[in-house]
Image (spheres, rainbow, N blue to C red):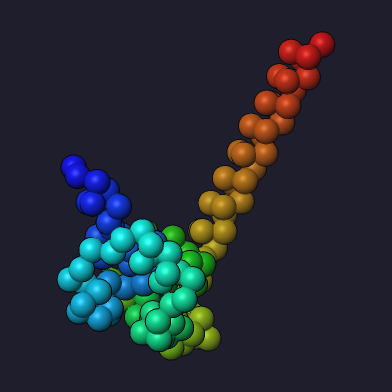
Length: 134
């Protein structure tokens, strides 16, 4: 791998890092490698097309899942296979279908359990550290 390639990112990688849906980006973005400097510039000063995509979508599944407060697997179980726009997401939140209510509850329970496990591990680590210090 030469040094020019190691400093360039594929459009799919940049889209993922920016939280945007690659097929909705301009063709010239999809067809070019983006340098780290160009990526930093996109983050610092997003062009209008990027600001518009972030505002209105369509959004990629990780962003849709986050906005709906469900997991990506929950989206799949709910039959959401396409990228959704901000309007689509708002409509789902205003009149949530049964699958969304169920998936949000499941996601909340999983997060709560993960936090409980993390807290327990932190307590054990603190106890070990105190025992080692004595």
